[in-house]
Length: 253
Ligand code: BJW
Ligand code: ZN
Image (cartoon, rainbow, N blue to C red):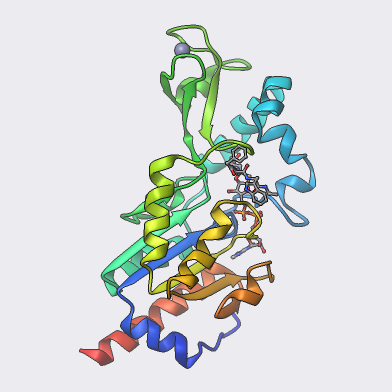
């Protein structure tokens, strides 16, 4: 593991921060074995996003889209949270307010034990009927051969995730925006920072006074605007940040 040097400015924030936000993307779950979207090994290297993650794509080819989601539901059910997810749970011992805002649909933050998790793009463990709204658990939809249909009305069931062109869940978005606006320290972790409106949150936080730290093995469009770029995997860097925060805050008492 490569050791990362944290700046004096970050150390000071680790010592004094009251409200911490961790904004996460697919990269934090990569070390659990969940594939990311973009990049050489990402999902979009093999499939076109608009064919799989849009209502137009779903209406055109529901079988293909369901096959893809059924596969991902099984992959995600089989993986475990990793050191990065667990470090965000640890932060709750160290700072008075910790909010996780995630673009991920894999439920791994909740499974790791984070208390406040806002899911901006839905949750792959939930499904609902497009006609009457009845909700279904994964066991029910995975038992169907082909596209699952609603027991109540015969309508088509879809995964409860946010596709391109769809609005983000209003309450999750409002809470996320408020958390970003009141953060002292904002971590943008494992996201390519290209999907909006989620990608606007780090800069909103910075404009309102947060110290903005990006954690990613690769630079992104956010990198030049972050106060600090910690280059490397989240599963290495987040535990290191917790260790430093613990030392800084212990020295304070
Ligand atoms: C590691 C690592 C390790 C690797 N440790 N890191 C403004 C400007 C331009 C466009 C728009 C705009 N506003 C809206 C749009 C349109 C669109 C959009 O943003 N398009 C751009 C892509 C061009 N946005 C929308 O449509 C959104 N809705 C919306 O805006 O509603 C209002 C509206 C309605 C109607 C009309 C117009 C506007 C909805 C976006 C929904 C996104 N949905 C998806 C699929 C979810 C369901 C599913 O999973 O199946 O969400 S797309 C996909 O991308 C998924 C992700 O959450 C999202 C972000 O991806 P993420 O997490 O960043 O992953 P990657 O793979 O891109 O990056 C991984 C990163 O990890 C990399 O950087 C690696 O280096 C790194 N990494 N290993 C740390 N170990
Ligand atoms: Zn129905």
